Length: 599
Ligand code: ADP
Ligand code: MG
Image (cartoon, rainbow, N blue to C red):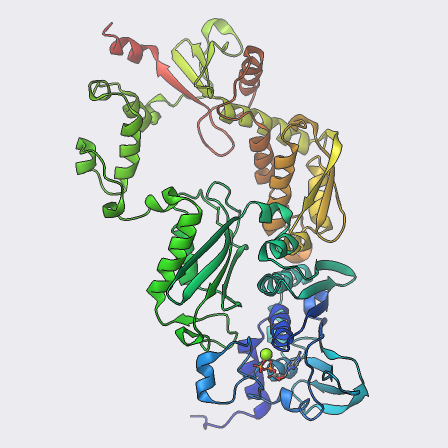
């Protein structure tokens, strides 16, 4: 049995440091929090090598006196609280006195600081948890902390770091979050020589969101606000009809502290009951609560909080979001007792609560009872589409190559016939299939023809998106037939689009493709360090086809319908769209005859 022994102090520090400093972004977060606590009006962050080689955070805050410079690196040394009661009323971001000592125990650190109004500054240098070497320095108002070679003495941790681009992205996310909470502070972030973020002071959250999230995303957000007793919530959220492809834009703050919280996320999600797969809401939400109603001392990273009355918080967020997005968004998820009173109806009494709202909404629009109870009523047809799913390729009348369109139905379907029955094509799904296969073929043959745009499109991205659109992503875009160039810190200019797609929808199309690329590493090209895989261009091509295809509720001319059907009958998989939905339904003549009592 090995003997128990007390761990050496250096090892204790390293273990403790692991709780606070998980990756370069944690260093950046802690240093910015210190700058904000020091009342900084300007914070400049510089990183190299994704922050692993260098993180430097410089502020113009109150500074540290020469007598405190060494103390700042002692564990549990802080100027922010001094008694147990203080824990109940924490307004500062820091209070545990752990960040600087933790960082210093796993990196090489240099701190330069001059308190406001002093004529001399101080420098402290230390590495891997040694005692700081402190000496006078030339006066320069504010504080700069340089952190080099993170995890140089903890190789196991170092191994867990991802590529510099990925780490830089996380840093951009951390800086963005803190910048959102402090619109009045000038925040910049530079990686190597590139400016990833530059947010001069602004007055409103709205303006700060434009700087941080990009104009495109910020413009689509809906404001929300609610108050209940001593709790208040304010912020912005995406409307349910325009969700985002990932969870990156879920920003919650409690008393201006960025937090990750399931309760808040859960309350928000209640307002989005019908999001499609792989879609998420975006939101920037600020909750204000009395400090004694929130426990911030839950975890060393201070990213989690506990609420004294969590159900009140939940209700308030649900209310605020539900009101802003319109009452309907919330209805569909509420328990049946909250649902609007409905006329009694046979189906409703037997259906499960999940089925009930669906079937009742169909009934509201349906014809009188005598019609809906007929054996072949439209509701029933819709409920059993498998019966009418056509096998590909449908057999055709008189040896033609594709069925002639007869008419357009409901602005959305193309009516035609083959020798087995009546055909209904979903015009969007069919066109999507045609475009998908043509795009795919040109892409494979590396013959993606492009068409110059009359006016180049300029997209503003969030710092995070821009960071991930490295050169490899621009190369992917080029292979797909876009002519794209990075242009400014978080801006991409598009000069040409694939000519198959035409110019009409270029704006939305480019946005979708660029955002998908920026948001999903699997789509970006094969930097060996990220796993060396070929980018998943299929999905991008499907996105392009989807955007460029005719939509539902779009009147089509006969020649256009003809072109779509002709194209569809030349594809390899005419029966489904690239997402797997059917392109056509067949109503067999025999069924139709039975319905008319002819058999
Ligand atoms: P905490 O923030 O929890 O107090 P830290 O280890 O992050 O602990 O910092 C220790 C102390 O160093 C702080 O309490 C503060 O007094 C001082 N300090 C750290 N960074 C700065 C800064 N940028 N400007 C002024 N003082 C700072
Ligand atoms: Mg701190």
